[in-house]
Image (cartoon, rainbow over all chains, first blue to last red; front, top):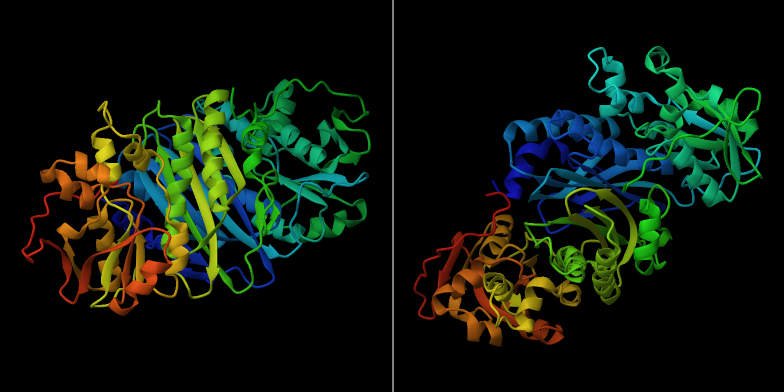
Length: 312
Length: 312
């Protein structure tokens, strides 16, 4: 099957003509219209078999997560998801696998209102690169560089679930709810949109709080103090994560896909009420550079973990 | 080295702030401004080691070609190259390889005026996915669907050189000029821009004339007759391609990255003069469906080759 037939057959449900799509899949390039007065946000992320998922992982999960990690970047900019391209490299064009992959992808694409506008299919080791595009009003983007001394450091949802699920992946008693946090992360696009014009700096947590918050600190030229006892944890996490591993999982583990936002203290209550997901204060931005983890008494906690490294 | 350091170190020369880049590499997404009154053209293409190039190919060539195949799609739409993202999957972050790759990429990016605005680096089997974006005046795109009965079928440059170079890749007497056609294809962006508002339908020749022209015929609901004796050939090709293989190489071989344009006969002379590359008439659009290859006497020539297949 050639790539055109392949895309038509499996991905046709994803290519619905949406507002702003002048020309979708099927020409040399897609043609898109960015609404007047808006900017385009573009992000790209790759998932590779053996690195981000196992070769035999359910294709529905792979399809979902390939898009989720990109949507999470759009969420962190406060951009409305609009369009994406799919570069799919496969060993074989296996119909069952492709149907499952397309089903997982479609499910999240429909939830998010994002349309497939182009792609490329190639034979080779299993790998998926999605480039996602969103739009936002000029000047409204949630950058990493706006954190101010005194801001509250806040995170959506709970932290560490995906890292715990990864560590427990061979355990028979791994709860489905925990497994979903790893394989079907829910990008926080609605929360990202609600944070526009309110949060001073936002990033999504893909590599772990320690590493990702550090990017905000670097871009904003500030420091932060994070209270380890305030990191939000799920019921599953509370029940299953060994106490001595909690901090490493919550601050050093990746794949949370929650948002970390720096917010003026006076704005916190209103912002918290406006979100569709819990928002928890975990620390504060400081003039003193560096990222410090402290306990309830303000005592430094040893940070014995690393952020996710892309090459090791 | 993490991905940020890696991109900063090797690709910094590519990320020059260009007109329209509000925010480049270094946040969750790039922020871009599409000029008012213009549309965005987006295309994505993957090159995989072992499929599109050999694992030990010069990294300069891989860098160049990864971008060239995407620029060629923008050329075929008549879009001005603006921005691209780079998803790079590598076994190892080898400094020599990365320097070479970045050098090849930068060389073509500078020629084309396209800026790197984002990316992702991942550990895994060597593979490169680039998503290229261009802009063009609303309604001016060169689609595949506008070919009209009576149009001349024209191609830029010469055909078959890359396919011949691939076939002769182990030959000691392979001329450098022929090898470059395979490893350093020159996308026809200037020609694509000059064809806007003039050509009725355009496609770039990545999979071979037979397969690619068929896409125009399908989209335009017409047929075509192509004269095999009029297919333009280079001096190298004339000297080295066995006569009995010429048609298969010129119409069935891939990787030409020339443009195929359907043009009203009365417009040909003016268009030919306006291009920076030779333009040759190779056939005409017919009411009769299907693609037929004929000789100088109008006699059908057997088409004993296939278009490039993405899965085999």
